[in-house]
Length: 298
Image (cartoon, rainbow, N blue to C red; front, side, top):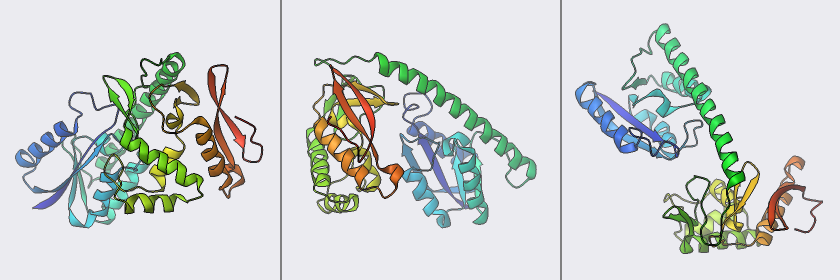
């Protein structure tokens, strides 16, 4: 019997689509292993909830590849569940081949041991990437139009359709503050302005038992995301367009700009010594890209 790693994934955009939920995928894969693939037994199920297939920055995917020596075959419901990027798929297949691991899709028939089978897989992956990029183009167009038209009020603030980040939640579709998380956000901004590095910030938060919303440890990447997202200063951002929201913001625009200035000043690369600052004027706001040595008053 071969040990099977079952991989399931759903992106934020797909979460509401019938048949794409993680539970639906898991149910179908388990049924496949029980009724069709009688030569495999489940080693583990790796679930990535709310992650795009266009890159490999997915915790469950990375854990699965770290465990590659423990299983014999990777099983997915469809190929687009594992990757929507042709190059990443080819790199994964190279890794599997080097380790003599098999790959199987529960709903697509192909044989990875033959040249024709590998050609079909590459062709299907190319089509999947094309579809993903076209969907991305349509999404960007719709989101940009939505960002331009969005008008929030003090009575209610809506998002641009994305899941609210750490520090915020939704109540009946409206953006709301999560006080205990915003306390952590304020601490992150405050300690960063005390000249602590991202590594020092992460160590302190993890040492105090604080975790991200996903229950993972703090690191440089998720801290950098919080420090550069204008939502924490009262603005939603899409493709350079700012939309005011009226949920409680944990930091002021001034504090946000101070953090951007400090982050830019720490860059050793001259090209990185620039920052997107929020400039408010006549009831409107915009992002202004400024050189660290040429900051004006905002």
